[in-house]
Each structure stands twice: as structure tokens, then as C-alpha cells.
Image 1: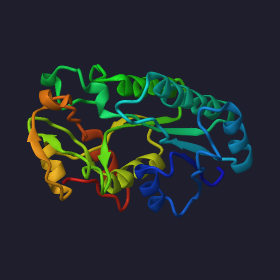
Image 2: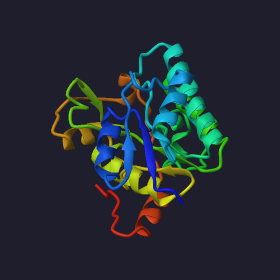
Image 3: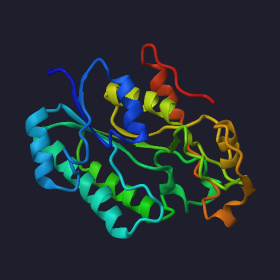
Image 4: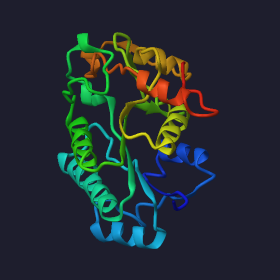
Length: 248
């Protein structure tokens, strides 16, 4: 079996940057957008020819909540379709990050949501990430990770945060640790990553040393709950040597 060579898209983002700390023992390449625009077929072909990866960790995405639909279609669906197509062509493993917002309109009484819970996306962004999931599921050796995470400055621009929400959102460096462990373990399918105990957005902002004003989910236009059941993640990580998942 060849040594792992991991091509990481979206490597300059908060998650991609944090992931690199956990894959130092492997050959990796996190190309810039100029080196690999995930929406361009030839860029994919050139990147794979030059680096010869054994797997692709696809984190590149349009995440802004107010983007035009065409950007979600182009980056999140078409870009992921290209990633999947080339993984199929070259027999590569594919790791893809989705979002807890695929449950944004799912009935609250079904939360915390399991990997096979019914999905009802909250907005166009979430629909596009679900579209990406549909692409990734077309190949056997894949891992879809659902969740949400925050970086050091994530709440610096927040004027308000909802106090009546439930989310499993957690710190990006912890997310990177768990996602890289899951990806390297070879597990396939869908896994939910996040805090064991859901908390409201105001509480999480407070933990991150920010003090926004209090608001409600209805006032701020966010889901009441996107809390995830992370049992599968916890059980998988416990079986891996030297690994411990986040519990805070």
C-alpha cells in the first residue's frame, strides 16, 4: 500500500490550517486557490498529476450566509462533484466536511440528530452542502463529517447571540483533531463531530471570550437547534490509540 499523500482543499481556511498540525507525519499539499480552483476541471487534473495524492480532504467551500446562489452551486456542488469524479477516476479516498445546518428545519423534537436523521436544510448554503454530500456518496471510500466549528476571532463581529438555541459547535482546533483522526482511521460513511453536550450560541461566544448582546433564534434568523448526536464519533475515537475527543 502506498504511503498516504493527502491533497487538502481549503487549506487556508480555519479548519484546513488547523488540520495541518495533525498530519505532519504524512506528505500533504494544501494548494492555494490560484494553484487549485476547485471549480475548474483542468486545475484538478493538473493538481492530481503533479502531486499524485492517495486521498483528497475536501474542505473548500463557499460559507458566507448571504452569498448568491451561483457561488454555492459553483463551489459547493460543482467543486465537490469534481473532487468526487477525480477520486473515482484515480481510486482515491475522499473526506468531505458538511454542516449541521442540513438539520436546520428538521423538527426540534428529533434532536440531537443522528447520522441517519431526516434532513431539512436551513438555507441555500446548507442545501448546497447537502448537494455535495450527494456527490460524495456516489463513491465507496468516503467520509462525510457533519458539524460546525469556530475560530479564535469567530465572534468578534457578532453584535448579538441567541440564548435559546442548541448547537454542538466547538473550537476549530478540537474539530481538526477529531476530523483528522477520523479521516486517518479509514472509517467510511457519515460521522457527526461536535461537543458532547449542546449549548446555546451566547454561551459558546462567552466561552470564546466575547460578550455579544442576548437575542433569540427568531430575532436573529438562526435555527432553534442543530444539536448533533456524536456517539459514533466518540466510540470511534476511543478505539484509536492515543486519541481523546472533545467533551467541553
